[in-house]
Image: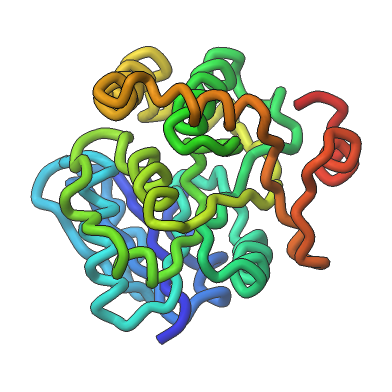
Length: 267
């Protein structure tokens, strides 16, 4: 099996069916990990061509990803594409991530919310920028939208890393994977996608203050024992965005080209 699409879900009965239907044509299999939902999320996808795995209680997104990764690899996935269940990602962008992965097989491909960023609340944008800075510092290369849930992981990454040894709570796993992947020789590249923010959507489970504090604590555990990784900090500050034009296979590096590629005049 080639492409498995993984969707963690917690109380997403309103949107999950539409997300699955849109995603299904772009993958060989779709897995939904229901994280102890109480609103009928599982019933909403009944009859759809999807494998549903259930946690008996809410364990957090990181644990849902652990469960989903294991299931996808058991199916023989060559790449695992993740999407959130709340409709903030477009399934139509999945082929773009797949094309970028064909060009860069040893890379995590992030669907980076670089277009129309002002659609998101200011506090979310600030929290994401802080997380990007910390993750980029730990890696020594600039990472864009380290908190995006739409991304592609090559299966080879899971041969190189013991994902089960990483955090199993909250929202820190996705950041930790990027850091560990860099140590294992995998790049992190971004494909620009739209920022989608529906003011009528359910409140986000991401808490800018609380979850940023958890990510900061995780980063501190990785930076402080190593003298704050000052060489990596210098390298990151000198680095440019690693954005892939999946149509041409080129990495867009300079500021003017990046602005043109994302359709924005601001970073």
